[in-house]
Image 1 (cartoon, rainbow, N blue to C red):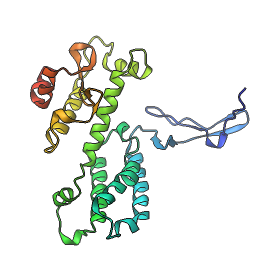
Image 2 (cartoon, one colour):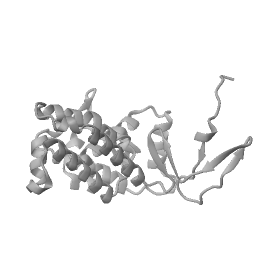
Image 3 (cartoon, helix red, strand yellow):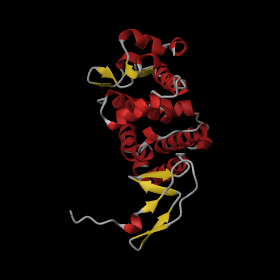
Length: 254
């Protein structure tokens, strides 16, 4: 009707999650292959649901960008703040693309942190043979850890979805995950992990006070929490915010 046509070479079949891999099929005489991995909107989707293949791919792409900018890192006339801004704009943006959707394991975090530190040493032109510890590197660049950046992105996305109208499909999906119709409360571990992320992200920063986090309007991006007593996600009030900083007290209430 609109002159649109399906590109069959780019059309694939993939089973994400549980179950065997489906066989290849023919649609109007055009073969459609069955694949275990597929790149959708720049993100590598794996059939097993794990994000490790996408993490490795992102590290490879970011490493290629870092190598192409080697002339920038070696330029002695450029000040360090300019090099850091170039790194954040051109390298870290490639590395952490759609990172807010990742479910990372400890091995994935170590790989990301190792690459992050390698890039900082390359910018500072400090070799591992010079025996400079990582804490000194972070002190020179003033860059946060990759895990902290991903944590804040996840919390920001969660808060954005929680603020949507009830009729929005994304908000409905969140509610369907929280309000399970099994005759019992949902398992609190995922909400406790969110509380732990918020508490860790607030208490680890020694230079930025907890109440001066980046805001959206007049509310902090991470000032949203899941309270099973109040039907899923809700905004934190002033009384709750101090309790979130004290992780143990809040977890006991959940």
